[in-house]
Length: 347
Image 1 (tube, rainbow, N blue to C red):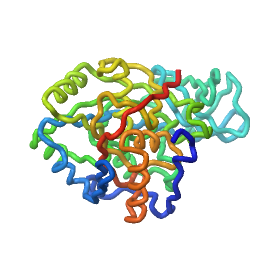
Image 2 (image 1 turned 180 degrees about the vertical axis):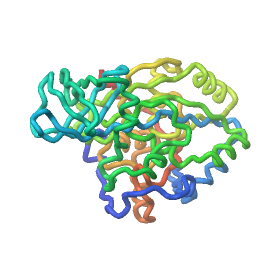
Image 3 (image 1 turned 90 degrees about the vertical axis):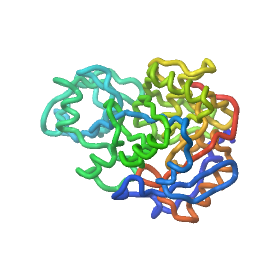
Image 4 (image 1 turned 60 degrees about the vertical axis):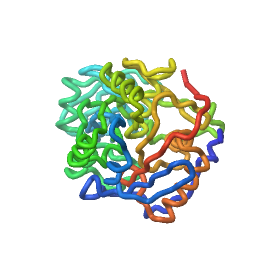
């Protein structure tokens, strides 16, 4: 279970959800507890959680991070902002017929110019002429995942954000949270289920395929996370009271587990390259709400570590047979932690 081919599966293209449902909480929910698979509706989550449990959400907000532009030579360019470094500077992927050298000026969205700086791996430093967040919001396009075949429209701009999104910085949505609407959140609160937030700015690397057969050789992409003292205290209180910590999405789980490497959750902010594969010993998260993930992806490896490799393989086969909707706009799973083991941490 440490080879890339162990995480491949065949998915009929018709099961890749291209558009969201009109009602967020109307999705289906596959509950996986050990080897037991149960088909439910997502709204059933209220019945599946207890008073004293704690839901931990990722409150990152997706940036309008995609631009189309031209170089001074007239060549076409596509830019995807990966991370905002400060109010004028970003790291970005730049697709062009030729790699732009430092000093190149690129006109984006027929509206403003950026200057290309140094290249670091697959990312370029770009200098914006004024406040990055304002220019992104005004001129950028929402960066839907590569397997969604339509260009983002006004409906996507609403539905590809969680209802609680607050901290701008992601280039992909924490999609497990897309199933929650305010009515459902209110029902959970009325039952006594707690709510806390972390921030992890999801990077474009979440869609990048693993390119090595030996997973120990994979270099995980870096993402920035924050766990507040209030969230750390809420997790501690839930645990002390016998409640379960339920991560909403793999990004929330990675933030919580990255901040728990000492053995106990610590508040703070840092970059994480935590790569979770079967054998990892989970330190904080007891249950996980997540969507279905791409073949050969690090996220499929993470859920296999959490719920058990064989259990996940069987659950995915069941989901395909039952025609669940897959990926960002698709249906969800509720997983219970089953496994303990080692972690691969890329420095």
